[in-house]
Image (tube, rainbow, N blue to C red; front, side, top):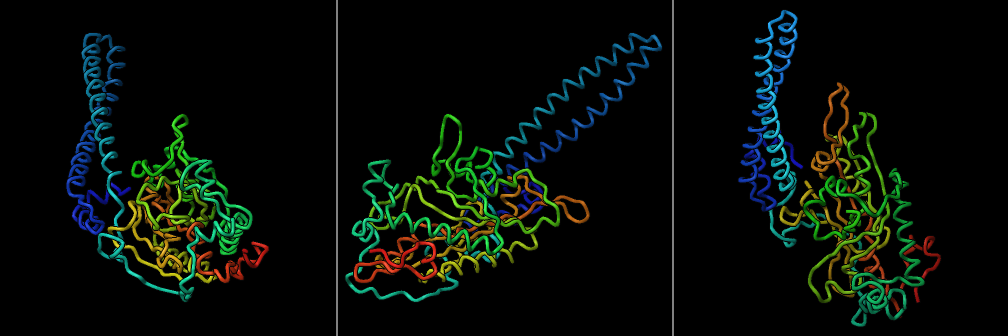
Amino acid sequence: MLTLKLLREQPDFVIRKLAVKNFDAKEIVEKINLLDVERRACQTELDACLAEQKKLAAKIGGLMKEGKREEAEAVKSQVAELKSKSAELDARGQKAQEETLSLLVLLPNLPCDAVPAGKTAEDNVVVKMGNEIPDLGPDALPHWELAKKLDIIDFDLGVKLTGAGFPVYKGKGARLQRALINYFLDINTKAGYLEVEPPVMVNEASGFGTGQLPDKEGQMYHANLDNFYLVPTAEVPVTNIYRDVILGSNDFPVKMTAYTPCFRREAGSYGKDVRGLNRLHQFDKVEIVRIEKPENSYAALDEMIAHVEGIVMSLGLPYRILRLCGGDMSFTSAITYDFEVYSAAQGRWLEISSVSNFESYQANRLKLRYRTEDGKTELAHTLNGSSLALPRVVAALLENNQKDGKIIIPEALRPYTGFDVID
């Protein structure tokens, strides 16, 4: 959430920056600033009323002691009028504050200067590519056919048990899932990330804190009776660990990693682009989250990108890193880099990770602050990244490593799977 101070002092800057995200903020920014003027005027008048009430209340006692009962009663009438006026001013101020908040949450985060202009994914910028794309020949099978042939993922059984987008992993397919999760967590913890195991359901305050609510209700599964939400990513519960927290200057960096199943409705198109593991309603993902001082957050972002790149390289998957344009970025992000791996049998790139810096946007919603060396409190910066989302990693591993009807397991994974091939 953007700060009122920023909107008050630099409205034109905010409007100009949000235009990079193809968001017209002019009307909302103007309404917020008008409401802020009204709220502050109400508060100033309320403070004056309360001070006058206090002064008159002290005067009443003196008049009563002096036996000036009529004068005391007159002053009491003044106090009653001031109390009524104070209640009215307080209600007006509260209403203005509530209306301000309802508008503030409609404004996306500002993109940083490095974000390219653009409207769709076609305008994203490829900043790096790595690992060679294998030549599989004309007989290569897509992962959904390989999975059925090798009996390691059962999509039809998932439909029977739940519905489309809820696959059942079997045998070496299930073992591969567990191996990838453990491998990713081990790499993250060796890099200094504290492993946590959070709940996979969160309350509304947590969804608001990281920006999923009120923006993405339609994408989240909701347990109506308890008003809990199934997590769309571990980012939500992990970042919210520090909701309403004031960190010390020496508490940085905060680095956490977590595995959770993730749940997303993912309503969309049909066809090969969403077949098999390409788009699921339930999937496994390992996440990394960092909380940093503002002056260190972009160095931390670079470290996170390099960290995720190292994991992808170790799996031998052809990859590319994209800097997202303004129109393709999330509501809460200041800058995002996507990692995609090449699926050789499908002949297309598949997203497996997003690494983002939210600057102070989430921290303002979370009331996540730190105390500076001079004792002041400032908003921290939050960052997160997938390291990694499993479904499309598995899709690319199966497709790119098929040979003579078998799947060759990358060497880095073999200590975790306990086998070299799936046949």
